[in-house]
Image (tube, rainbow, N blue to C red; front, top):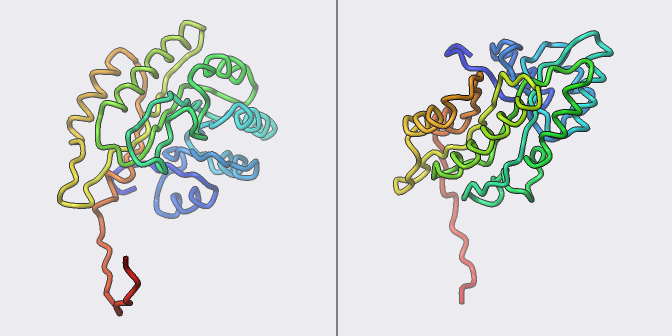
Length: 228
């Protein structure tokens, strides 16, 4: 917070933790696949800056609650680009079979329906294809697809002002690990998004915090086992 970052949160409890840590509510992005109606209301009450919608149903719920409260919620629609991040299967979030976001092929129609709801300012799209990504190629592939979607949505008459590009760049846990240089990532993003004319948002959590501590352990005893 002191360095000017915002927070990406996935629950009502994390909203409160972020604010307690000094984050401004307007600098908080509320992501997460399981937001309850109570959490959506809480986010509106404290004034979080953006809701990243995981589904059409979530968007409809947010619009209804916001309108009921006399508010308008700033939100973006998370899309699933069906891109393999080439990382561990358990932390891959951008393939068609993953539970995150809406299929990019359906995004235009879903965006149309949500954009017309009272209480909702649907101002862009979001993406996040996985964690511990060791190669920039999948990210570039996903971003190119998002750029095409932005063009499609604008052609349909929508105002697109924000795109959340997520995070995912890995950090070296072992001396032999090779991860992308953040400067190379930045250069790629600048090239791909040069004509988007949007506010870009990023979620570089592990890249910021991954090397901020150590895991200190001690061997208590060695237990012999049966080996073949």
